[in-house]
Image (cartoon, rainbow, N blue to C red; front, side, top):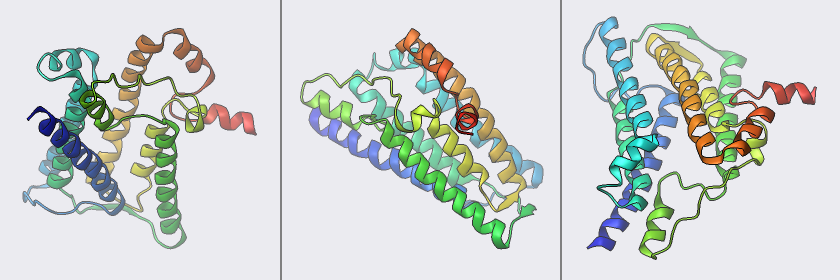
Length: 242
């Protein structure tokens, strides 16, 4: 029974965690899916969308903290935590996409060459996101490797500090390319502008919080990395090339 639960959790984490990221990528590329229409006025629409965004921010940031992890692994085996986190975050992200309300008021709409440039920029950012993920090597975003190691009665490999590939240019390249994807939209409505602004602020705040955990994990090694490589925007490295 324990092995069945472990396998089921691993598959669910991969499907919901990975699937929610794909769905969210489509959402920010093409716009809302119009699944649920609450028939609200402009203020109500923006309030609901802001609430959905904050729900995801709170859940994601709360569960990523080490203090939260220590509390939950008193109930779940530690090897299950990352998979449980992936399922929880995936469900909330799907709720954001499914319940998102659109204002309909277009603030900006690109056409012609600019439209296609923005579309190309989005696809380049997707490529950069995949490159950044591959740079991490044995990174286990959905917790499946930890669960498999647990079933084999082995300890999962510790995640080393990665300073290669995209991580030679910036300390958080996944966030950098996510920001490009968020902003590379040819159509800007009031609700999309709200999403862009809220998620940009959250990404920068989240990166600062993550830095504290990384310093706790890697100490002076990470501090030296901070001195050499910018956090999200690789402007310092571009200047060196010029």
